[in-house]
Length: 306
Image (cartoon, rainbow, N blue to C red):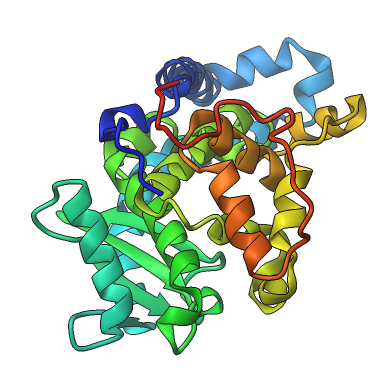
């Protein structure tokens, strides 16, 4: 399936910019509070007896908060050195099939040069992550999602790699954006809105660049080892179900949206084709009963903008 009526400008989630602006305002407020505590904290804290016993701890935290920004510059540039020493860099002569996937995605986006691409066993904790350093963009794939035969799960790698290429294209790895969100991104619950909307935006890139890569999202729910045994037709149907109040509440306070919610959102946006996926997976061993689109609307894959 292709998305002929989508272009790259449609891939950023509609709420992304607004949540970014609100998060920047909140971040500036937190930074101002940290500076105030360091400069005038003693007198202010003493005037609030409840906080008095925590005075030194609060001042220490405020100092760390102020130092977080310059420290992030050091971390960004030293990280690439560590990753290069603990990873295998992909190229036309090293895992060429996977490298060619990235190359084709870059061409689809009109990029003249692809980011550096690495596979690692230990340099990152998740399945994949994109980073930027001084004049360098690079994507790191965890070995947990890569098979020695790229044909076995090329769709999975393509979707996940597309998400990370999107992270770079959306500017999430840029220093100035990290600087503007230094505190918000690290504070639990305050980081939920920006983290969730960025997840949706990256998913949209993954679906656009790998329109048959739905397994690249399902793997987040079941892991690589169980993925071949998942009845994908049945799992996709679960995205149609209506969820109860507590299920919605639990999903709303999670840092990342639930996988089924992310899947349903992509079908609703027309970036993945529900009917095509159901037919494809039914032929590969799912149930033979026909299924109606149900609650998932706008899923014909026509690429209608949302």
